[in-house]
Image (cartoon, rainbow, N blue to C red; front, side, top):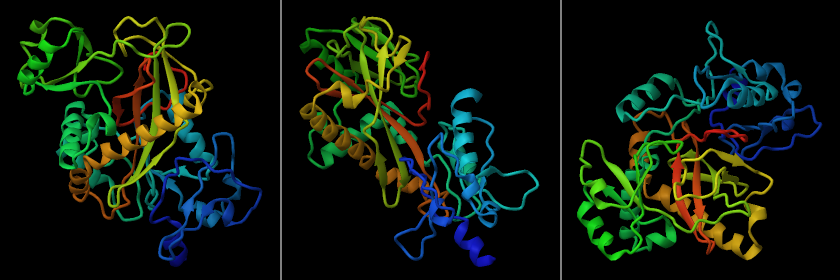
Length: 371
């Protein structure tokens, strides 16, 4: 029994981003994937949303399949929570009960905090052993915070002698107030004076402002740093004049080594009102059927995929050192943590991509009214 417990408690669980089809077998191959390494236990096969394999999981294994109980999800009870609950239930996994002595092995939907020290303490209290895998990754603020992400990206391309526009394409950006003098020099040379002010930690477009007068940024202080970014004036729109945004999900399953999974079946967002020069301030409609694969021709998609892949890889490579340093404080081993991110891109009329923002915990909704 100890051998079964040690093996089937799934010491290193890889939360698979790509769902798998489960066949009609009733043996362990239906619910577990054998690792390529003899010293690593098998991985759990999470089924698709509509596929129930719980009856295929042997009772002696199901006894150890416990999920970390959470009080908060990034969604309402009717969307993300029910979605996660259903997949777990269909996988034969149950929430850990208060009186149970068996420890949970996996978790998702952690309460995220901007305080690095608080996050370390939270993770230390949550993790009990090597067999557990949960989110988030310590140090996620290095890529989620817009100002930190900009500084890390610039440092990375400079150190490696790369072109920022090619490897991490984004609109011309400045971290205020420290880049104020650099910005003024650029301001004088440009004819189009329309810019954006973005809070470093803002979500859902909150706090974004437009300005075309340099006096609007004179009062920015170190106590309230912001990102100042050039407004994209020629965004690609659909036939209804709605601005198109592309979202791609990225799963990081370990920091040492850095392991990233990307899916190109992204989500397409359409701004619900005609483009007025105020991105991310309108409600959106979501159309997954008219997604990335159907919007562009093969040559354009091939070029875009290369840019998307390089921008995601370089973004994480730019923060690899702080991620490793912060993760070592809380993890029993390199596989204890994982996190789902999303990368949002704008497209201009020349089919050029611009990295808009990186989300630390994207909402898993397909019908959005206020995202």
